[in-house]
Length: 324
Image (cartoon, rainbow, N blue to C red; front, side):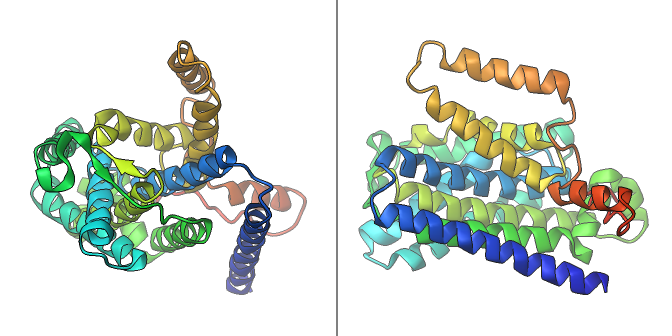
């Protein structure tokens, strides 16, 4: 019975998401949304993809990575080369961007994921900077001037990629492999003693997170017309990290909400460049003061509804905490 309810809940979520897609597509096709709101919507979706992909690495597996902008850059440049240099279709370019970022995640993951905590953070930060410096000195992709990219990102592409990212990572988290990753986050020594191959699962989480960051990079590159190495500096990595921490380490819905809120705050404060970063920082400080574990902690949004139904004498709490 519980499985049946979960299946019904899954299809209900898909139906609501498709309804949202249809409404937005209708507004865009009838030109009821101007370019400002469309850009904000696209940027929001790309940020959500980045937040959810990093959530798998930090929130679920507990690996403190701060080089996510490096994977975003790899995906962006790889997909741009596919369309602008090799004249390949956009769909193939996105896939190549994701695969290139996943390979980069594998190459950086295998030697560095034996590191922990601050050491891993420094190693991943170094990876991001290495990618940026390489792009800065390669004339084939424009060097410091950047690379001009045709606008190919559309709302159906953004929505499809976002939906696939959320479905894949949510299902991975709720699978046996996801539980193994959560056990690593909670206590790596205990997980290792129970026979869980901790290095394998850390690399898998790293590769999956990098893949979807690469897809987001492809969408980013083909939406903003030009990409430059300065777009993918360590500040971009910290922006993505803030989404995950603010939403609550271990909560995917928290990461989604934080990415949406901060994108809105950042976008609407662009008219006040002098005070933008001050207000942005104050928002973060206030949230951290009153919600030190993030907006949702380790809980998912759906668990609040199930808890309410349980309190009213309905079903038992679904226990959607991501705590092992």
